[in-house]
Length: 176
Image (tube, rainbow, N blue to C red; front, top):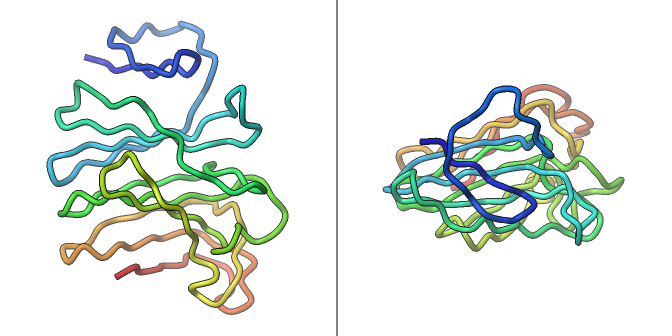
């Protein structure tokens, strides 16, 4: 079975993939599984009511039936997305890491790159790494990946640039 997200109708449908069929959107997609749940993220073009690129999340306990996608919060000056990663720890908490493809200042009150956490994959709280690390980073990393360690700490790895404190290159951050 293939699950299809229809952006225009904000719903999921099941059906067959048909090569050559035209689509109206090309979202960046990531999926994670853990603690009896799946979470998938979509970084999509703006919807009709919002001019910022957004992250949408949906959850499933069986991979066949999915929740209605919910949009993660973003601040007024920055989009979420462009580079995304998602992971689930052994307790079922979801973590999403992402870059900011728009805005010309630090990413809101927390700095870049951004991340969001959720106890259920539906309700998300957003923050960022920059301020906690005592530095500023470029908002659009070339790559971003996250994992949950066996002790449920989260590691996020990204290719950073523009850091006065750490320099350019691959940066690894741990959230206990």
